[in-house]
Image (cartoon, rainbow, N blue to C red; front, side):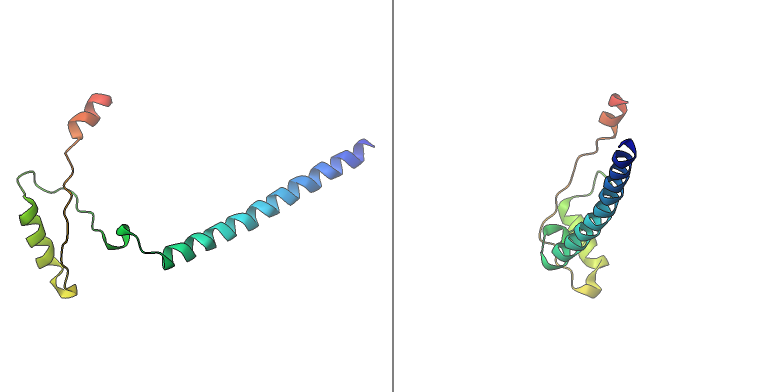
Amino acid sequence: MIDVVVYFNMAGIVYLLIHSIILRRSLVAMNLYIDRNEVSPSDFALLVRNIPLTTTKEDLIKQLEARYNHVKLKVQYVNLCYNIDQMVKLNA
């Protein structure tokens, strides 16, 4: 009787492994499908790092539009973030 329980446990583990692989593949496929068909702000966003602290929004807009003039980039909005290096050092 104990042998039967062991075989059922092994079969259950194999089933769960196969099911998790199939589920993961279907979730990845769904994620790709949604990402291709839905438009979000990140599809049109640029992330710029190491901007000098003296740079203004207008200067940044001019630089970006000059850099990407071959694709006719028109900057609609700039969101400058704060330099948080000192806060990170305090938390360390």
